[in-house]
Length: 459
Image 1 (cartoon, one colour):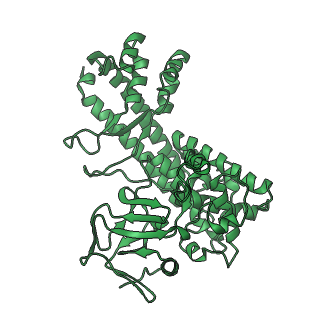
Image 2: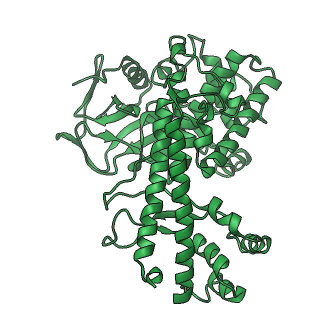
Image 3: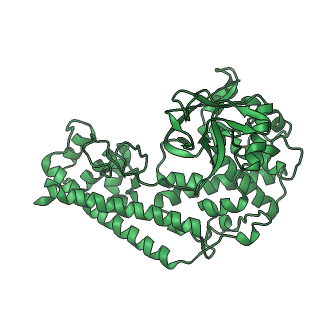
């Protein structure tokens, strides 16, 4: 059957087969707008190796194991070649993996040279990742910007550790390479809680308590693109497996779910967002944050009440989970949002506490009316904010982010240090930002329409 058509993946597959991986009915391919991904095929033939599918038809079948990647091919902090580096124990797992990849960049004898051929170029990271966007960070939503600040602090922590312990040279070129490798780890790692260690060992308990430390890089498995629903990924001490969640037609992209993340998180951590679907069968984890429109309305006493009851922040609009008769584009406020809005509109604190504590399980008619009225005003402000951002984006010039450097494959970290204030926005970044603010504007508009049509606002 056909090859992947891309030399890098073919070489990686041969390397994995030599290490006893099994690959059934999928092949790497370039997916427009998404880079490399995996497609369902009858069989995959690489060099002299034929990979025979389990089903005789042109589909992958639900429950079929399509990938089995042995632990000997993974990169974890327990990998023999990483142990040889004797990196300081105090470092984060993220730092250890990123430094290992950095040291391997110019080493032709590194264990995973074949793997590197499937990784995105440094220049592509500049266009995709907000951490290094020139001028684009100012157009992130407040929620995304806050998450980006946390990400930048982790990057600086890991870079400073590598330099202060004299593992990496404190030069701009080394920092550029480290940034690239750090982003590779951030965007391509899998959950791994060190299953080869005894379940009750001190090391395993310590590592598994912090999700940030449970990381592994898994070749070929990291080519799966994200979807809200996808194949099931599992691991044991033997390695990782991917199992079909449903039947797939030949030529259909096979995805996994990275987790239930909203688009602000996906944008900052992975460099993409998902479109809003009008399919009633689709499952969306997206949410639109309202914190920056609700919290400034609160008095110090109200903020104190929200904190003491555990309802401070995380106010969102999310897709409705109502029965299928509800329009698939319907959105609704979360319970936390209703609690905050009720506090802002309910003159009696005792009535608010009754709702918070569950003694009044539902909002009373009068409460529903005033909450909906306030929510409509919040959504109007949100819509205006989105319109302003879209106008500002239209006025800002886009440019190819360092394409002149593509020949050398160098991505600059200057924008990380300057907070992304250099001129110009990569064209791909500009399109992503426009898409996100359009989503937010449309959600706010839809919410306003539904509130205006409700009984509470008709009077």
